Every structure is written in C-alpha cells, then in structure tokens.
Image (cartoon, rainbow, N blue to C red):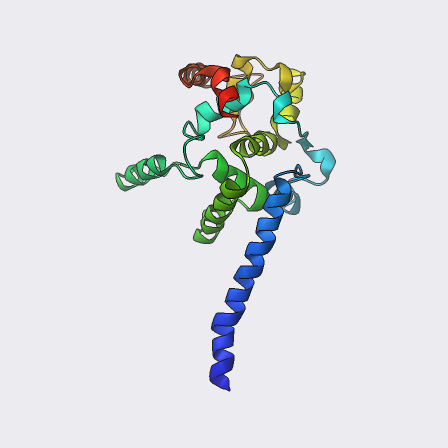
Length: 235
C-alpha cells in the first residue's frame, strides 16, 4: 500500500501536473494568437513590487503592426535578432558565442531572440535561475509552434519596455516624439531600438553620443537586411 502511494506521489501527480500545465499554457498562447494581451507578467511583477501603483503609473498603448511604421520592427530585428526569420526561437550561433565569451573571462551577455524576450516579458519574471530559463525555453517553443513570425514581432514591439514604465512603441512614440508610431522616421525608429537594452536610462528624445553612434550602426544594418521591402516580403 505504501509503495503504491509512493509511486503515485512521484509519478502520477507530477505527470498530471505537467499535462494540465501544458494544456492550459497552450490554450493561453493559442488565444493570444488572436487576442491582444491586456497586460504582461513583467508589468504585473513591477506592480506587485510597488514600482507601479496603478494603471495611471505606466503607459501601454497597443497598436496593430500594420499601422506602425515598418522602420521600427525592422530596427528591432537589425538591433536585437537579425536571424529572426530564419531560426525557430533560438539563435544557436549567438548562444555559443556568449558561452565562448564567458569561458574566456568576459562578462556574460544576453543572446535572447525576439521570441525568447516575448516569452519572458509576457509570461515570466526577471531572474536568471535555471527554472526561469527552462520555462522561457518552454514558452518560446510553444510560441514558435502556434504563432506566426508576424504575430511574434507584433507582440514584442507592443510589450517591450521603452522607458521608465513605458511599454510598446505607440506609447513610447507619443511620449518621446509627440506623434503616432505610424509616422516614425528611420532615424527615430533606430533610436528607439537603441533604448531597448537599457530603457530606464536612455532617452531617444535626448540621445547621448553613444546613442547617436549606435543609431547610425542600426540604420546601416537595416539597409543591409534589405530595408522595409524585406520586411514586407517576410511578413
């Protein structure tokens, strides 16, 4: 009797939990393929930590990707994930480079793809634990299986942090440039992409010399990728 209870505890319950978790998480991602998320885990984690007190404390303004200047998603790809349309959620080359740099004594740098960043921002929390990274990989796989690349890119540019408590390109464009994201110029879009790694300290409306230099590099990369015509073909 004790043996049966023990086996049920170590086999039946974990397997049941995994099946239920998989079904629920898959259903949520399938729904979000069509329904725009009203908030994200990243925003809510700040709310529970006291950084955000109410919806008045942050800006989050969703906009369909077809109504956003193509320069910004192109700038994001050029800056964050140039193999976005080729990989299945994980950039193995960049991951290996990051590992090699770490082993040579250099600081560990991020090698996350756009899909991985969507998985983290939408469903998880800020942490570098193996549990969080494992869940990130799990959600990344599901997102790549269920969503199109267009939907992944659309969600990312609408939930990414682009300033202190500013989320998404529409809210950021209105805040920094006083205009809709539909009217962003290539230079403005590239500056916004420069903000992504450090959104709390970089201001695209008042760019530092580093930001200006980085903007010029991103503009070159956007051109090398084929410009907005490439984006139209891929999406």
